[in-house]
Image (spheres, rainbow, N blue to C red):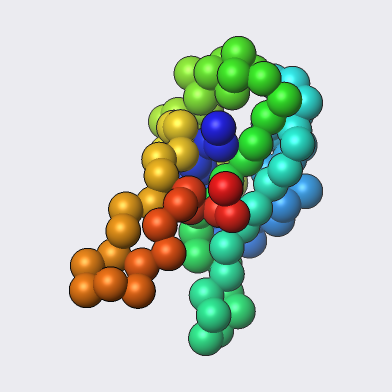
Length: 96
C-alpha cells in the first residue's frame, strides 16, 4: 500500500520527500504527479515504503506536521474511484 502526502510545497522534490520518509524506514518509491498542461507539480504525492509498520509510523508522525512552510496531510492512499460517465481508469492513484 502507498502513502498519500497532501498539501506539499510546489518546490518539494522527490529527493526532499524521500529524505523525510527515509527517517522511518526503507523508501521504495516516491511519485510527485505533475499537471499535464503546465508541467507544474500538483501539490501532492505518493510514497511507498518497505513495510506497513514503517508506513504506519511515518503517517502517525507526519500527518499534520509542518514541512517547507505547509501543514502536511499524510494518510494511506485510497484506491481511485471510477469516474462517472465511463472512461475512468480505476485502480490505484499511481499505477497500482
